[in-house]
Image: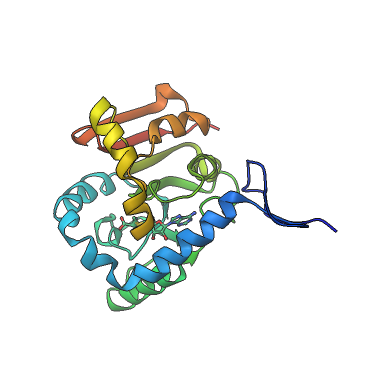
Length: 233
Ligand SMILES: C[S@@+](CC[C@H](N)C(=O)[O-])C[C@H]1O[C@@H](n2cnc3c(N)ncnc32)[C@H](O)[C@@H]1O
């Protein structure tokens, strides 16, 4: 009997593992991503400390714009939590159970009302359509294995008229820099599961967001960007 190991996040052809067993390529990459972030969770804040010197300023700026019921996708170790306005009702999700554990520990140390963290796959969220007023991501779409599927899910769970705010690093449009990022990509991907050559704007369009409702601001060169999107379902 043919056994296929995949679920509805899989948009491409299942891959044949051995006679009778096929596996969704994105599902296999998802397990790798989860494993990588579980492995580095304990060291993540130390590894990222130099970057955080810049990112904390940007986090403060864009997270001050969040309102209402807010979802943070790929919350990691919860570094963004202190920057949310007090009245925001916050739900964080992450695929890595170790990351979720660290965020929960952080919340026990620094409690925040109306906040919960759940282990969940961004490509297959368990929330109903139109659940959140705001959806946030910070440096997440470099690591989600199937970014278009993850963005489609964000579009679905964000309410009609809601906002999606994304602080993301992407592939440079500059010819030489972009090419260099392509060549270097396997290194960060292997070590921390981070793709440095993601085309996030193009992926937003593929996920069905309206280009007229996407504002993009360059924060560092054309690599670190803030996406501000009005959602319409
Ligand atoms: C580079 S870290 C960023 C963490 C955090 N947003 C921050 O700003 O520090 C990427 C995070 O995305 C999570 N992630 C990757 N793919 C995911 C998915 N499909 N669903 C949920 N979380 C995912 C990883 O486990 C990791 O915690």
